[in-house]
Structures are given as structure tokens and as C-alpha cells.
Image (cartoon, rainbow, N blue to C red; front, top):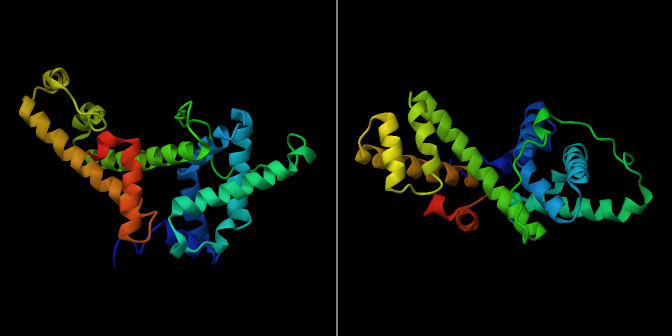
Length: 237
């Protein structure tokens, strides 16, 4: 079995059978990728408040109306599935906006407290809706990989070391940074450099694993990696 045999696509396909476990997994998947959906809606010109409502309604319909039911893994990445479904939803919402008052239409029902507005704002002023979606998608993948790396450090009893070095995983430290952390941890500079190198290497591996969950073959995976490098060059270099 390859790592492409158990992916986000498999969750989507299993959910077609409407089993409780598959539905729960799909809802968790929607919670994870809420930030890029919200970023796209905001960049389409909606206010922050309206974007929150639209994102909530989108995910509710995605699940309750089974937007995913006709999805075909052979047609592309999971990222493309979500973006295509979102575009179709917004076209429909815009077409009916003139007939709806605020609070009308499909009732909003929170799927989970994870749909809150705690995600940091990452939009660039010059971002297109598609670029905003891709940037937040990349950030979501990176955050998931960082969380896994943090948990690994905790399990290995290296939480304190990770906490001090995590700031160096996205941007390479300079000599002053090494000196500051070496003094705080009472470690040699070379020891810290080795630890940073190993953490960065492991982070790259975890990022690949996260992206493999959204693709169906090696070609798609490499394409997603190139897209992520464009957003976070320092992580994958």
C-alpha cells in the first residue's frame, strides 16, 4: 500500500456511503481547510462578517447536500475539488443575493466550534481570490505539519528544545539568534545547528505527508510541493 491509498480522497469517497465514521472524518477535514475558503470569500469582496456566514453555509451545504458525492479523484487534487465547489456555491449565492435578506436562505448551523474566527488574517492586498485561497491552503498544510512535529517533540521529551527552536524552522537563524538560544539552553552553537537542521528536515517530511493526503499520485504531489514552496520558500529550501 502506498501513502496515496489512504488520503483525504478516500475520506470523501467513503463518505458517499454516509457512514458515521466517514461523515465525522469529512467534517474534520472541512474544519481543517476552513481558512483558505474564508480567504477566498473575503477576496471576492465580501465583508468579514458576511464571509463568516458564507463559509459556514458553504461547509454546511458541502456536507448536507453532499457536494462531494460526484467528486472524482482521477480529475485532480483535493484542493481543486474544494475550490471548484466553493466557486459554484458563490455563483449560486450571488445569483440569489438580490432576493435574500440577511439571515434568510439556508439556516446556519455550526458543525463544530472549530468554525470560529480565530484563524489569523493572511491576505495580501494584491492577492486574487485564487491566490488568497492557495496561500491559506499552504499555510494550513504547514500548520498541520508543525503541529505534528510539536507532538513528536513532546512525546520525545524535547518540548522545551522545540519551543526555543520552532522560530528557526520557517526562517534560517543568524549567529545572533544561535547565541541567544544557546545561552538560554546552555548548549553549544554546533549542537543547536544540528538540532535545527534535523527539525527542518523532519518538517519537510511531514509537509510532504500532509500534501500526499490531498493528491492521488507522485506527479500531483510534486506540483503541490512547488506551489507550497512559492508561498513558504524558506521551509522547503
